[in-house]
Image 1 (cartoon, rainbow, N blue to C red):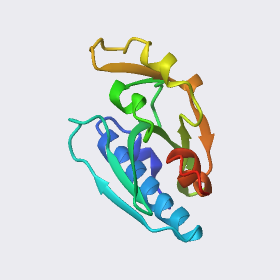
Image 2 (image 1 turned 30 degrees about the vertical axis):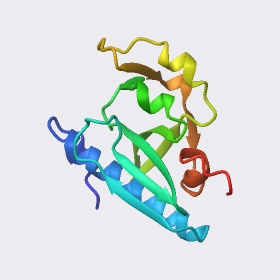
Image 3 (image 1 turned 90 degrees about the vertical axis):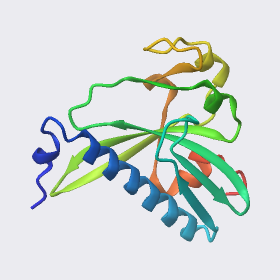
Image 4 (image 1 turned 60 degrees about the vertical axis):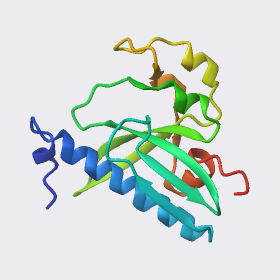
Length: 157
């Protein structure tokens, strides 16, 4: 029996972040296999450049910032680097952990076909010149079999 109540305890957010990140990477790779596309992934362990994951599909590069909506989380907006929103090859994915029947499920939302200009003009929660705020209303829910197309904007899919 999976004990998701363990993850809901104080101080367990790092474990939740790790689960969400690796679930996303697994689903991204599986989507690539389904579509017979070579997907290469590189992870960033520090937040210097505003992204967490660098993905290459058939030689085309994309950058992705992963944000967590934890079991106990109430977040409805997230601060991200403006450069990521300005980059046509960049995107943000919010991963929500959902308690299933004896499992943990993951729901993905992204900035699919969203007006980046509006987002960039929005002040970050914690004011910083290089950051802006993504709100829940900017996001569109995406199924795991749509990650290459809708998260990575890979048009040939």
